[in-house]
Length: 126
Image (cartoon, rainbow, N blue to C red; front, side, top):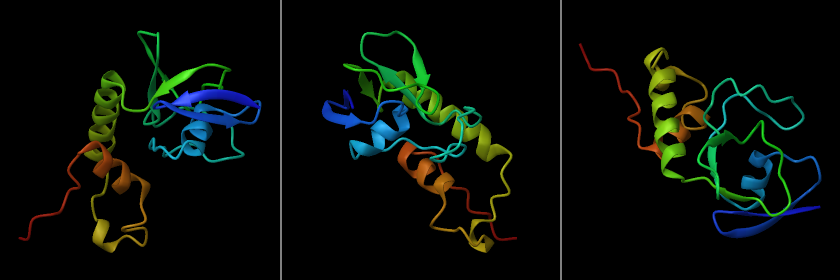
C-alpha cells in the first residue's frame, strides 16, 4: 500500500494506483471525462488537474502515480483555474442540449461544471 495525503486527509491506495484513485479513496472529487478504472490514462480532457505540495506545477491525476508521502491538493488555485478554462473550452464546442440527453443530471460534464462554477448552458427560447 502507498500512504499519502489528499486535501490534508490520510489515504492508503494499492501500489500502482494513480492520483484519481487516491482522490476518490479520500472521499474528495476531481472531475474526469477520459479516464475509467481499468483503462490506460491518456489525459485527453485535462480536467483531473491537481496541485502537489512543494511543487510549482500541476499534474494530471489520471497520469500520475500515487507516491509514498505525496500531498495532493485538489483545490490548488492553479489547478482550479486550469480546470475552469478547460471546462469552458470543452463546453464551447458541446451540443448543449442537456434537456434532451439521456445522461441529463447523471452527466460528469454537468457535475464538473457545477463544481467549478462554470455555467451550464440553457438555450434561450426563440
